[in-house]
Each structure stands twice: as structure tokens, then as C-alpha cells.
Image (cartoon, rainbow, N blue to C red; front, top):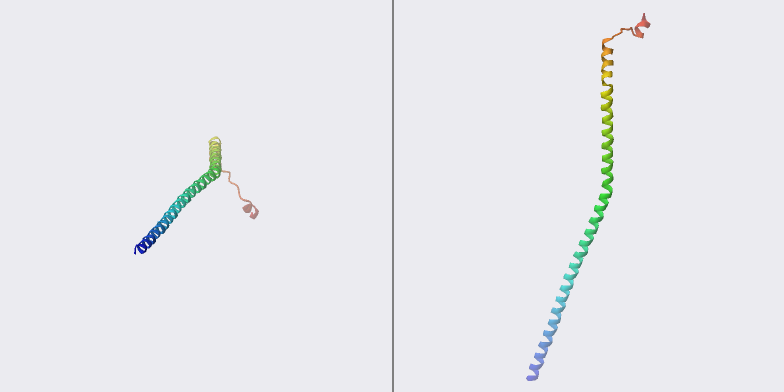
Length: 118
């Protein structure tokens, strides 16, 4: 009976060692999965940061052209407005004078249609 007990104990010990191997394999696999997930997150974050930097660079390069064009258009509009104001200030009195003169110095004339009928 001792041989049977010894064989049974040996079988149990072998089963326990096999179970420990399986548990260790599962733990190792879990650790590898955790490490792989962590590495993937790190790579994703690096890629995201790289693309954000590329986008900011692209945006800065292209939006500066719009800002410059807008500033140039505003400057040109200011120059034109100032030219109109200057023209109004320098010639405004003459225009008013000519209008008043045209209204007050009326020279009645018959139209060509009336003259041709007569």
C-alpha cells in the first residue's frame, strides 16, 4: 500500500507542478499583454503628439498668409478712405459752390424739340 500511496502522492505532486506551470504561463501571458498594451498606448501618444505638432506647424504656415492678406487689405482700405476724405475736404467747397451757382444762375432756354416744332 505504501507503493500505491507513494505513486498517488507522486501523481499529486506532478499535477501540482503542472498546475504551477500553467498558472505561471497565464501570469507571464498576462504580463506580456499588459506590457504590450502599455507600449501601444505610448506609441499612440507619441504618434498623436507628432501629428498635433505637424498640424500646428501647417496651421501656422497657412494662417499667417491669411492674416497678412487681411492686414494688407485693411491698410489699402484705409488709404482709399483717406484719399476720399482728402478729396472731399479739398474740393468739397468748390462742389457746393458749383451746385449753388447752378441753382441760382438759371438761364432758361427752349429745348431743341420745341424749337424744331416752331
